[in-house]
Length: 254
Length: 185
Image (cartoon, rainbow over all chains, first blue to last red; front, side, top):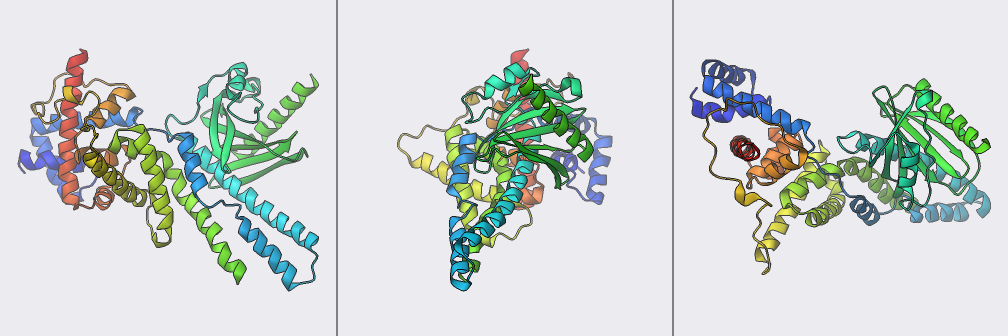
């Protein structure tokens, strides 16, 4: 193999795109040619340097919102209407009963969809440079940061003493609107705590589910919905939820 | 029957959101490098997602990312064409592109010294200064991690062309890297 050929093929070798036969040929050339060997090493170094630097861009929230808006809304009003019409025409079931039934069906669908979305948001946040907009382990820095950015101020609680380190906050986008994410860490595991306003002030006790290998713990309290998402085991995530809720209670009482 | 038919749409939307929205940052990153302008990149990505949604029925996989990228690339090429015909179009040159010797590749003598590491902004600038079609190939490979086959599909060229473009792109980037290293010394 000539250096001229190797000049092109070392890249395919670096990228693991050569079949075994060709890879051996290029490797043999590189072993015998100090020039090509040194070049290849440089290319690998540059490649490594790029992989380790922050060369990606994050899509602006506004863009995400515009796209979400342009898509037909998932809460599809026509469906709801058609279902109702179906009930009204097809059976003697009263409209009220029908509404109740549909509401239940829709709520479950919605919950599942939102769980999907919080897991997607969690995954997005794990990409380089996406995790936090405000970096701080201080709750008195993170909480005010949300002010004016959201219609609800998510509670930010320092749980370091309980083994969960507060590392910052982020604005995210779930269920076609902005949502606050408070970010905690335990060892190397990230926990995203998503907080959104809800019309209901009813307290709902925590439920844990698993989606795409992530654990989700969701609960509602004082007009806020919470979703904690992490790759932590279900027991540790439950521990997080319990610690958070008892710290909240202590805050209110104290 | 009515119910069934009208349920198709929300279902399609849901599937599309789940399949395509996770790649929003990837698409935006590609558009930023292709168009080198934040506002144009936003417009292009939005247009890309609308087109993708429209053609989602004909999407047969396997990978969503290259499929989206192929659409995005076409949108970006239309934008190039518009810039060329627009009377006020500014000849597209990257910021600082003039100082970077794009075509005079550094002598292919490997450096004795170690390569310097640069911060993200400098690396972005060096990549953005690459000429097309080398920049596109480079970004698809190094930043988006597409395989040669996928790049070939996105750019609608044979795999052999991808290989030679990538070799050229890396040689150009290496020259720019060494030049930058010289400058800041």
